[in-house]
Amino acid sequence: MKKILIVEDVEFNLDLLVQLLEENYRLVTARDGASVIELAARECPDLILMDMSLPIMDGWEATRALKAEDRLSHIPVIGLSAHAMSGDHEKALQAGCDDYLTKPVDEDQLYAKLKGFLGE
Image (cartoon, rainbow, N blue to C red; front, side, top):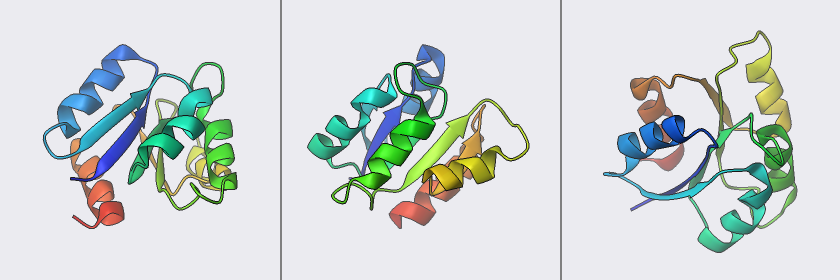
């Protein structure tokens, strides 16, 4: 079973993602961007769902730090944001995200992206 690291600080959003994914994936969660590097190195997730608005270290910086680590840079990161501002998708890709979704997350889009990255 593939493992996904969900980085989300809002309890409601985290619970929703867990409910959507827990039957088909092993899940690991984090509440801030600062813990992502250590957690990703320890847990070796197959994919990371990264909220871009996080405390301590935001998702933009956490993704840049993750992608700068040779041993972790191969892990696909899907950025998540409630802000559907023009240019955010491009900004996420420039930060190192492999893809981007706006919240509330569309289940069909999420599953399609996971299937594309995880080959399931």
